[in-house]
Image 1 (cartoon, each protein chain N blue to C red):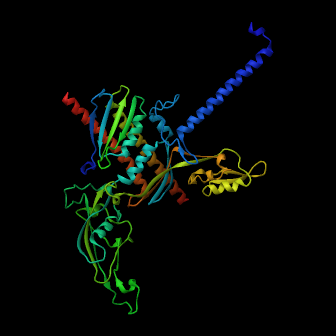
Image 2: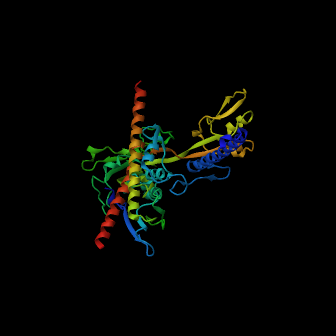
Length: 377
Length: 115
């Protein structure tokens, strides 16, 4: 029957249907895009930030399966090394949640063990630096030694053993330089040993320690005290293994931080005088200028990575609606600077291992708790 | 090795008086803070059986966290166990990926220096 209907009746209907489907589809895709944006991007607005928190938990979004899936994690996760030297490294960690990325950072600062001077025995100190200030200064000197070779010292142990303690000594006396000319005014010429440096600290191996490692301060040129003729410092020191959360002197990093990868989108064409203005709103190298088809200068985003996310662009009324600033929520740009003798990549590996140790020890505790429960029943 | 100094981990289980102790529980984790607390909270909240998961530091001078889990019927201890195991395997993967990335980087730079 329907086949007999005149063709012109069908065409508009069909078109209507197409339009409806098309509208629905575009609505649907824009909704999907919006949700995807909420889940994966942190948006920088003029006065505020939005979508800061992790929201991809089961039940938060319909149509998404947000249950933990280790295969999905493994297929998405990437590490990209930007640079490594013996003191500093930069790397990207992509496809991980901020809570876990932050755990690594926190462990690097506060829970990777190092050796530092903990006890100072003062035999003589006639310098102008007070005993307690001198002891504190000595404690902060980073030592070039692998703390993994040592054990934590028991709190009631006062002597220490070769496994948990390093003995160090600093014995220095300032004297007049007999060969200095009479009219000299420079202390470097007039006196001998008038500056005490970290390089003057001597390590005294305990037991078989000299076979295993060689201990010295990381830097030889840290000024500890200034002396004048007749002044003397004679101290013995003990270095022990400790954690940064106990005292910052045990922290193995100078800085361990991350930032999120910035993303800059130009929502409409920016040409003419605005180009230079836009360029000046961002860090150097972020915005580039190209010749477009109409032979005018047009701004484009070269690399958002270098941007400091200053949001200067939102102070320019002619530009603020043409730019969208955001950050990729699961792309972490780490920078780790080692303060001790270990390479920064070793410290990062250690921090990951420490988080694993935490998990294992609580799994063991959970087993113990359940065993106890079984016994009482 | 690490257990020697006062950094050893200890777990206490606090049962709730009212309600089903199989499905709601507060674990007291000694010598822990946001480092483990937040990472574990994220992994456990990803579990569809979990109705609520959160933690608090009751007092900044006390070195412990209260870690609360409420489930939709699954045993809380098993949920916590799965969370710890998942976090452990995440770390394992991060560690192997990181170390191989470092290896590759060093290998490539060595080659560039040689050539």
